[in-house]
Image (cartoon, rainbow, N blue to C red; front, side, top):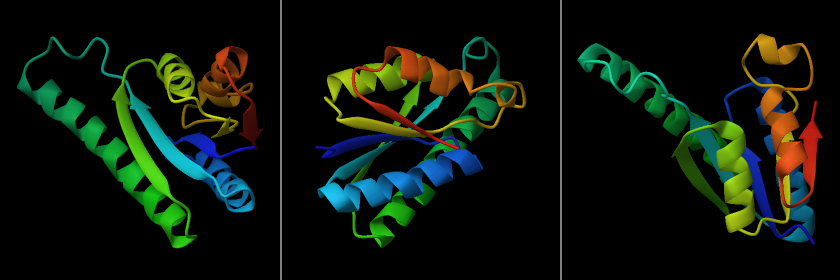
Length: 139
């Protein structure tokens, strides 16, 4: 039923809780987990080297977030893959969900942004509205 599970990670506590739930679902349904982190550099790509170093730091933070998530999943004995993408988070998650033919997206209710904490996170809301499979939002 839920053999292919997509889990967006942003390093927030909510995304880690979502990952823990996804692992339990994967164990129950003999599923595989794909972790995805989407970072955005829009508006920065035209600036000189110091900004390029900042962009590389953002990308490296994404690599670290995925590595930590992968370690957590592997420790539970679940097959795991990772994807690091640049772009708009909602668009990239929805596109990956559709193209990868995922059965379920499990994600945190809120991300790191303080603005997103006002309501359901803007990314989780956007994914819930546009995904081509069920979305479980974990608080």
